[in-house]
Length: 199
Figure 1 (cartoon, one colour):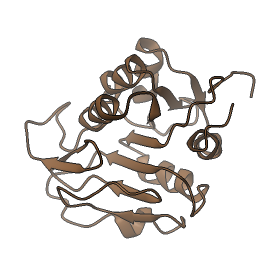
Figure 2: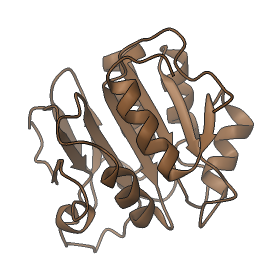
Figure 3: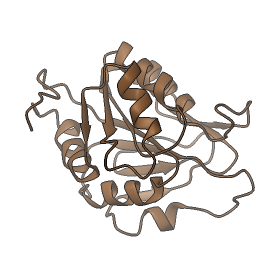
Figure 4: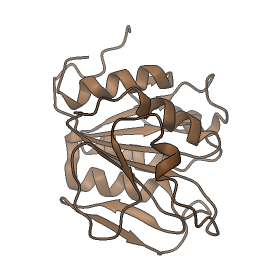
């Protein structure tokens, strides 16, 4: 990799990911590359209809050693866990806790990516890695700006690899994204960032 992603060697142990169309496959592939002892917790928002009552944790967790759950509001954030935003709820990270709410839709969707990214940035600052994956529209762009502005790192899936390129393209055009990577590269880099490696 020619770009320096974390030259400061900061521990980036709060990972937030957002996606829309094609996101299920991308998230599964990233999670499959993460070890059971990953010293981080992860939040994932994938756009889904408000009528989707199914719990996505089993499907998204089928290829990873991490614990994948759809949380309840008030649950504690724990390392080694992946938290999937439930249907029809925005998910936010506070100081050690998760909150779920049914406030107004953002970008015509609930859950939306921006509420998770903005809340994590405000609570955890430079510890945050924000990752925008495949999807249509520009959800996640403002959230990534929030991550960058509080000292965190912003990454996107390479638009050429994405099933729908507009979400990563909007982020690249309007934010100081540190790198555009394949999903395999994202998975490998997240492991190093969580351990504070110079990447």
